[in-house]
Length: 381
Ligand SMILES: Cc1cc2nc3c(=O)[nH]c(=O)nc-3n(C[C@H](O)[C@H](O)[C@H](O)COP(=O)(O)OP(=O)(O)OC[C@H]3O[C@@H](n4cnc5c(N)ncnc54)[C@H](O)[C@@H]3O)c2cc1C
Image (cartoon, rainbow, N blue to C red; front, side):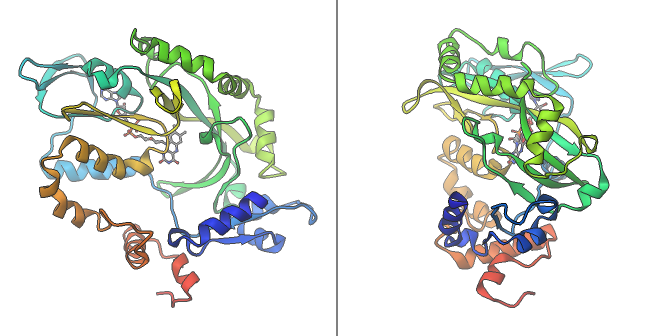
């Protein structure tokens, strides 16, 4: 409670978090999170903060919309094609060897290559042979969730409720009870639990991990193994959990959760980046997203795990800045049109922040009361 209160006091004065609420009052908590408060004794000490702004973004749906837009603008998109190899040509450009599902091989030449293959990125980066791609490894961790199959329970929860990661657990393991809307269907998930598979993609190969170990990253990988014994222990414990043990963790959130209402689902694969850093030394495990660019800016690769989807725009701006330093000035007017806050600190410009929140809410069709309006006592439109 002390941690949460301090966190609330620090965040709520920040314009980006205006409107955040804190409570220890059971009646209010019952109103916010009835499923979590059901059957709890009045003497139990429990606190929560609430922030109204924010929504689910269906990254798959967004990707399909962006691809449709690109197609309409004449960009050729090839589905079910796999990039097998990326090589430098004699004149310094890149040649991609691409295999279509069913067998046909195509070769494409490019002056600039962006590798955005999720878990497939590390192998492709290694194929380029650029020095910046050396001494980097990847470690796959599966994300498992409990999914509620009882519509009555799903209907009782309407929030994303985050707890705190257990001591010794990695930051991406923060437990949460999460209402999600996928294609207008409401679902309720609890997790994540970590699982292990040597695959780098959900549909990858059992040899992904072993074939990613090269002479140049062997020491990096071994150092990571030796340094992260507590993480290895945590992963082994997670993999060994029985369904009932997972249910016990869920019952910290939903005290009367019934086993038959929940199924275990594998949500996806993350590949945590391992690299040598000045601060952490050899084989430091990274929990965020990493952009690796060649010194001449001709190739960039996006590696790493969550937060990925939510950082996509800032990652791309980073790539543009690093790989197209000569063009960026000419492109700025277009970037400002696309991203009105480009180059502006929203922290220092609350008026612009309010404008952007309002226009984003409008575009996403969110009609709820905006937190800044509540906080500032403004009339709600
Ligand atoms: C369980 C889980 C929960 C997550 N939750 C969140 C969250 O709440 N918020 C958030 O921001 N992020 C979250 N993430 C992370 C987020 O999903 C990823 O960061 C994001 O999907 C990465 O997008 P991407 O386009 O880079 O890669 P991907 O979505 O993995 O797409 C890469 C594509 O490239 C293809 N590909 C790979 N290799 C090749 C090749 N050789 N040739 C051709 N195609 C290839 C793959 O088949 C795939 O279609 C979560 C991830 C997991 C696993």
